[in-house]
Amino acid sequence: MVLEISEDWSIPALLLAWLIAVAIRLATGSATVATISAAGLVAPLAADMSTAHTALLVLAIGAGSLFFSHVNDAGFWLVKEYFGLSVGQNIKTWSVMETIISVVAGGLVLLLSLVI
Image (tube, rainbow, N blue to C red; front, top):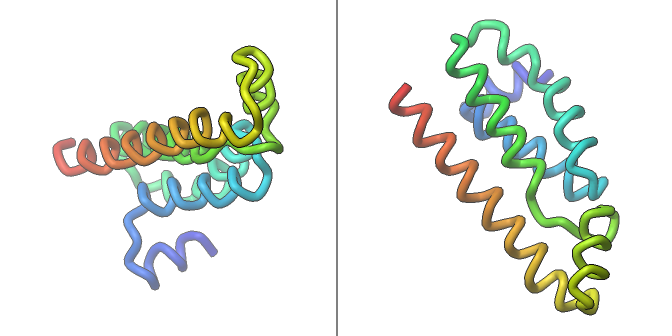
């Protein structure tokens, strides 16, 4: 199914992997669940990739799994309590920072794929 989506929609495999990891992260709140689930879903895409592009696929999944930490994430609560923040403050700082890291890392992976 993921292969069909990738081909039918002309979405680059790295972007699709990032988007799947983002969707799972937003749905579950867990980076671990997002990473493992996305890796399993996009594994068929890695079959025909070079070693370098497979590594970029792994990085894209990892980057996507960081997207917007929220209340279902244990790390969200650790940061909130450690720094004495309110939920709103934590979303404005920690969650936004995680989202920026995810987007920038995803973009860098896509740029690297043009060079490698």
